[in-house]
Length: 342
Length: 241
Image 1 (cartoon, rainbow over the protein chains, first blue to last red):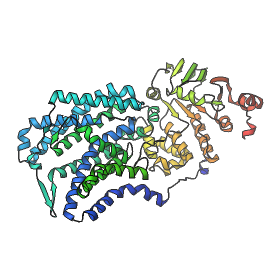
Image 2: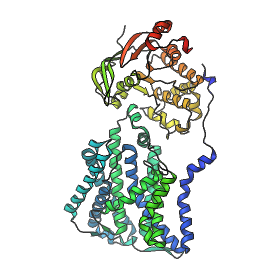
Image 3: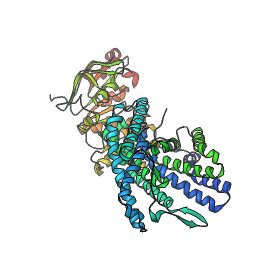
Image 4: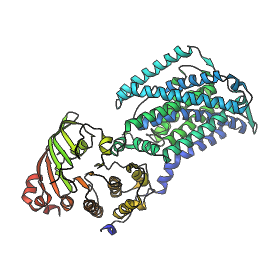
């Protein structure tokens, strides 16, 4: 045997390169610090930071499915916003049926109502995602221009179906009684619902990381994002994986829709399309296909929107676009690109 | 003589507007190494990819272990216990070496004894078991690509240029691995440009040119006939030793 000839050798990146690789992890604390210095008042900063993190978590929930669909399936789904709206309306239906639970001062009943609304919304959007993938997306795999056109068409059709089922008017969605009002911490008012949104966002991020790193389907998704052809050559039907991931992505959009709807306290058929600008910015900042990048990108967008909204309101609308421009100048493929574009 | 494990009859493959395979006839006997030789662009890689279903057969048939597979999808072909090591190795660089191997084991379990054998063939894989495959050197990635193909027993292994750009020490490791697989009666279809390597492990040989098989025979006969090598491939064994 000639094994003795083989000396294990590894090309380790230098420490400076490793640190550069970890830099995005420091962006969120850095932005918080800049925000603190710019705002000056600790309590105002805390309120804005909590609001920014909550908003970021909800955008992350909506964007996480889109980035995995982008990364694994190479599908540009402009119809993703339809599932956000659909989820919000499906959740509203359940919350309407559980009016007694919502109005009750019991936190358990309130959370139970939200849990049921979320479960139903995810079921509806997951099933709708099945139909959307089979009818609209599957025929146009690999054809980006057609994907944009047909998924935009799917978005319009879904919005019209929402008008048919729930009517054309804006619907007011009251927050559950126990989740109204704020906690006061260090003289800072932090809305209770925002704390719930942060908790759900963190739990989802942890769960997604766990599934992607510890389960076989997660392994397949990570491998498929990198090289779908090789996954097939190993014997795994990637089309089935596409379908499962698409349904899961749509279900996450549904979850985000319920959370966003309760946060905004109003829902409309085009609410999903409106929030999609932020969702796309987050996916691009994070790097296509990256859950970690998506998470950091969402936090940055949420915080920046709130800080600039307070400091320079006129800049608030374009601050996230500026952020995206700066990130792309620094890292043209986003913070943590899984899919390398050439 | 027993039936060949793999048979290609008049296989035509088009890639976009290009007619690459123009009637390939090939038989791969059971339990040995068949080497596919030929100049760049002769159609060797396309032949392997066509067998795997990664390119569609326009005309002709492919029979594997008694079943026609040319209309099947890639996952179904792979599930017939055919492993494929592509030219670019197909390593999942963001996954660890362990995860790459785990994915290749369709049973979902890495058998300890077989893993020890693989570590014996390719020791760096044990060293970097929990490292991301992306940080491995080119030779180590090739080891991983071959190790993935042999992580479980397979009826047929298709390997596309495993020694391309590798250092001699790594090529030696590949030769040892292929010889051990031969001893285990594994059938291998190997595309190789390195004639020294090809002649060291090959039992039978087929030479391609312009999308067709232009020569079939025993490797020892081709290795012994410099004039034939020169005529078929514009090379001689001596020049590569």
